[in-house]
Amino acid sequence: MSDRDPTAAGAGDAPAPGDDPDLCDDPDRGDDPDRVDGVAVPAADHYVYVLECTDGSLYTGYTTDVARRVAEHDAGNGAKYTRGRTPVELVHVEAFDSKSAAMSREYAIKQRSRREKESLVE
Image (cartoon, rainbow, N blue to C red; front, side, top):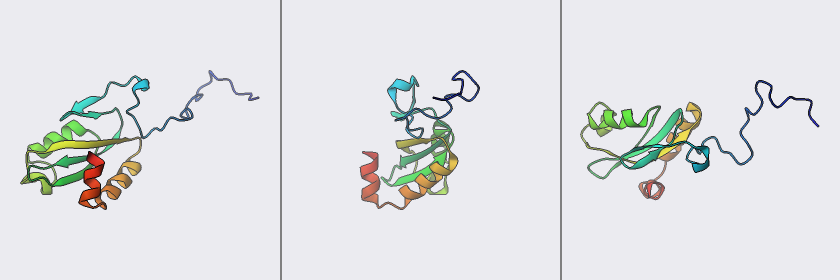
């Protein structure tokens, strides 16, 4: 039996068993996710997103604010790659609690073949 007082500061800081902090779309959490281009964007600090450009190509990026970043791409102020391929549409988003986890996932997605990326966004 533990001596720790469950009401003490720091109690409950660790996620409960079965809770994955990287998967923020659990309907039981009570979060009401925003939507961008019809894609649910759960509350988180860091995101990896996939855009479909007007020419059908896919672009993957990292951001802390999905709606702002998609608007930047659409306005021609996003990545150089997307500037001549607007308008863009958000087709996939993943939420993360840390920048390093999000950046690692962005790199992993960018290493995938087009076919693998298409299966991810379906």
